[in-house]
Length: 168
Image (cartoon, rainbow, N blue to C red):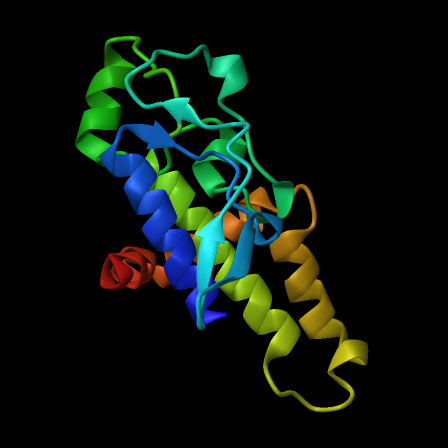
């Protein structure tokens, strides 16, 4: 898992370095491949990739796999905008048009890691029948989970940023 995530972060980082967004980072788009005598993680499926500098309309911004969709992409709104800036724009009647950015690709990798841990951490044998675990899992990964995911991001505070920057 760590090799796959490391490879995905490296691949997404390389895309960002040359001015592209992936926009569909998901567990199905990260592979472990053999290179000589070692395994490396790679990111695939560039079908939704765009050049960062291109201005895209709002309707094509909601791209990605629902289970790993970043909170802001799902809501099509900036949730982490500075409050003073947000209030200032609101008073002027301005609502910034939402555009997907590089942090959204990284947030998808975060949700892949959380998803992986939910499926693979050693747990009591009856975990599958534990209603609270299943409710939490469903709240994070089933479609329509945006509000619970936003709450999880808020609870994590800067943890997401620290997590992804450690790998870069």
